[in-house]
Image (cartoon, rainbow, N blue to C red; front, side, top):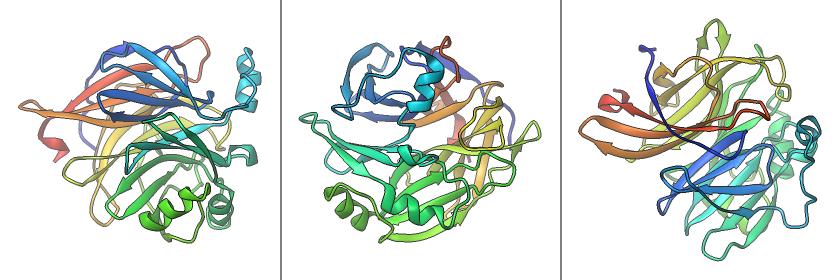
Length: 290
């Protein structure tokens, strides 16, 4: 792990629990784990009209604690072929086993039943907690975040063709499961790092963020010492990582652009507080982290 990176605050968003980030057509799309909306922002962080993901759901309670109990826990957001987005619940509770496929052209939202996949994964993974998703070549890769000191950190690798066929049927199953690959993102300040998002670099490499949150289960929040950004090698092992400023619980990662200074990435963080709004950050990695 290299020395600590510096981040730039681009904007403070109008949500608290930012948990997934995708850039498409110069719009930043964000899911928040306590919201049933797809939140949208300009590249300067200016709010754009959000889009509903689960039509018919009652509005979330105003009380923060009550909202956390009922939240859909949308933790992962991925761009699919054709310009649609896939938002995934974490699976950490039964009511968090649904997702949504949103067509960005016409705003059509299709609820996705994740139980067939998550129930199968739950037989292999203790304390299931899906926190990231990205299309990577011919695969759909999910990030399993182990929040305790013993739970599994892993990449869940699905065949993309099979997954897209399943999604067209309103579900996601284990039919296309290729492998569950354990990974070891390491520790920060003596606390194990747990995967929080995945993103693709234009050169095809798979990147990740991971947070050091001191908690022993996938549901309850804990004190966060900080986060790292890193990339995986072709065989799925951590090839490089670097810490971000202390205290940031980074949960969303998206490639931005390449300049002479290096590769620019977008980040969003979750403060686990109803009083603290999520920051939209930028970080520059000279030499692409190589």
